[in-house]
Length: 630
Image (cartoon, rainbow, N blue to C red; front, side):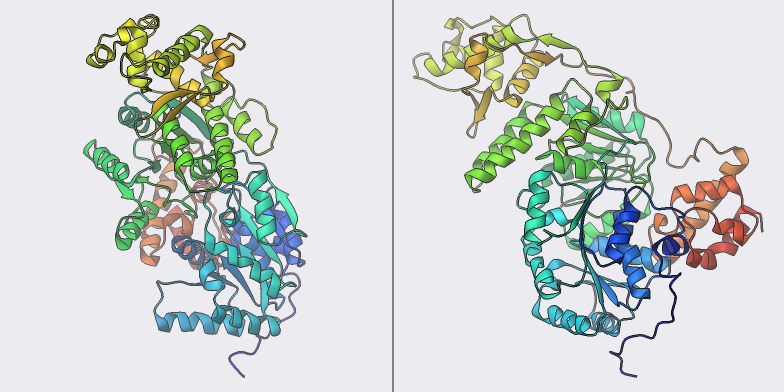
């Protein structure tokens, strides 16, 4: 028989049913949320746009249909994936559960790539992962044409679909060519998936991928297990260290920084402080990045300090915290990055420190970009929404979900709910600051009209006679010393919030301050300003959770905890032997249920969530031995 002939399939209607596949292959008895509707729609040949939060089970929404359609003789599913690391992890996990999957990327030798192509063209492969730039090459499209003609092209899954949108937070031009899939293979179902997309981005995805006739499935964006905490910068390194040591000692986490230099300096400093931290950014050698990523995925207690180059598609379920030392560009970025915490559904924290300089820098990056006016306008609006989230006195989760069009109630689990911030009538303080900026522009003390930065403004307001104040004769201004009743920290908080509210702008290389049109309404007393009271720097522990990554779940008794630790030791050995992250073998939650139930037979073990048929066959006897119930 020719190697390109379609495979012979037995009639297996039951085995091709989605719920049967979910249970048999992945070991889960039920779908979650809208998974079942999405899977049924795609299995039947429909197009779909799926918006589902990180950790919500997006992968199953295309993996189960791919398996179902393959078992019905439909051939291979093509998965568009932007990152090599994601391809490796997904394929490794699928092979572990007995699904024939592969990837095509630059890590393969010519011989390995040719073998994968033969498997694809024969129809034996269930899923093939490839980057968009490979999929849109003439050679690969010709291979897809051949598969299509023989009825062996089952579906297209476009992961991280927000990358196609210029309004999204991670636009990638290579995604634009994916419209060819609809143009050439209109009868092949497509499912586009993303965790983050506001209204602008959703509309752009639909237009650019030609998904006008697709069903749109929007799951709740809420991640109730994540606690959101945002603090004002006051020695941010020390704040970060206290947060990690007090709440997450020995646990896995990600710390995001804006620059490569800051990433490396922060990682080095955390190591000096006794933590295990690794840097990750696009400027590092590819082998170093891969080594650091592998350690993060395979070892416990690693803190990855990174730019946004790290994270997309990282499936590590037990990341207990994500920290930001710099303000992200918009809420989509913030949501995507914080969503890498707590994928296993266990408690996790999203912590961010930000200050006036963050606001100024983000506004300047937008203003200085070569983009068009409309793009800049949209990006300013997105930044304003993030600043509103940071400055809100109300529930963070309510504000976050509202951005994505989802109504909610106060969560009781963010910093504002747990410790409601005090507010004060800052109208007069704001008028003093705005008046002082106005007077800077009116005269510069014999030097002509000039603008000055935040530090000098605060010195003048507080009546400090510095050399610069004397040089420009600003001690002669009527505003000199009128703000002596407030501390420097309080004035910085007022200025940050005035910039965030759009009444003050910081311009130029030296971040000199200027007034906007809306400042006039404040100066005239036409509006009142209720601002947050600057939080006192906390030296003790925060209100977060405290746990050790090596501790068993609290609901296990002493004997079950011993079984749990024994299972984790066994899993680590298997993971090293197979060169896989431990969670690909079994998730912590599955090990915990094994330890709690202590199954005495393979049948009982097979009833535990997360134990599919292939893993039961491969590991069942060993697990019973480790549990001591064999």
